Length: 226
Picture (cartoon, rainbow, N blue to C red):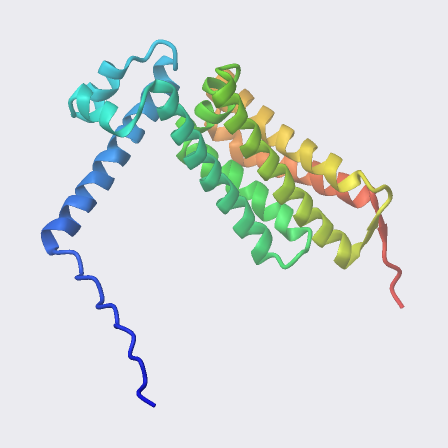
């Protein structure tokens, strides 16, 4: 019996060099606009920054900004999502490298206060100040970021408990996760936004982490050594 041969689809042609170059240029232009908006939102305030000012800072036309973003709110949302991803990745890597030990909390505190805060003060202002109390759309994105950060912290704390013992209550990991994020937020806000005391962040981070680790240990039923 004669076999029916199905047509084989040919591979799509690879993009040309010029197409790849244009794609890179679009991505670079997009990031340039985001960087300009983030800087202006943090330094001059979200409400005081117009699209024309962003275009001028990014050295593009206003039409180019609107090509990438529907409006200023859309810009803020994209910046929030980007900042949230960076922060989650930074803290998550610290926890992962510590293999479920309390050292992960120390490393996370260290990278937050000694790396993220001093190197990205504008992102601190964006996520903790300029995005707060905005539209329902912005607030929904902000809530999603904070929920994910708390969930990440809670997972890390449960991993610590699995190695060292068990928490005294079923809500302990969740309470500690929300408290840790709240402490990081308030201290970053206090020492970077309310007061320009970046030089104190290393010491602040050490004290904060010692406080956090002590609290975690206090809520644990430590495993007895055999």
